[in-house]
Image (cartoon, rainbow, N blue to C red; front, side, top):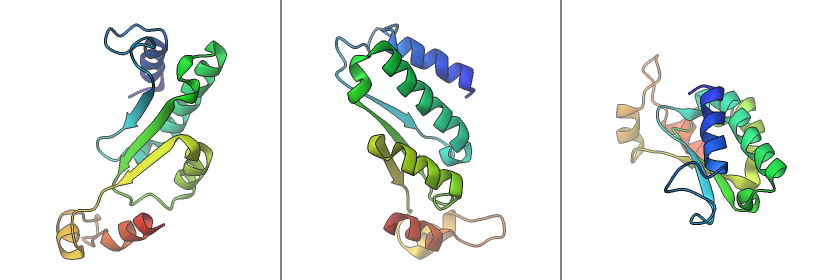
Length: 129
C-alpha cells in the first residue's frame, strides 16, 4: 500500500464515507497492519499512524481518544532500532502481536531464514521482551 492510498482510506474513515463504519455507529477504531510481515514497512506504518493522529487532532475527531493500532508480526524484526523507536513512539495506542508456530522444533520447521536457520530463538526473545 502506498502512503497516498492509506491517506485516502483514513480520510474516508474520518469523514464517514464508509456506510458501515462511521462516528455515529462506531465508538472506536482499530487500524490493523497484517499480512506478510508488516514490520518490513515500519517507516510507512509510522507515517500512516502519524497522519491518522494529526488528522484526528485537526478535526477534533470523536475517535481521537478511542483508537488503537494493531500489528501482527513474525517477530524477527522486533529488536531493530526503527521498530523499537516505533514501539516507544506509539506505545499508548499499540497492540503488537507476535506469532509463534508451537514449540522450537515445529516453529523452526516452517519459519526459516535464507541461510536455513530457524527463527524460534529470536522470536522467543521478542515475545519475552
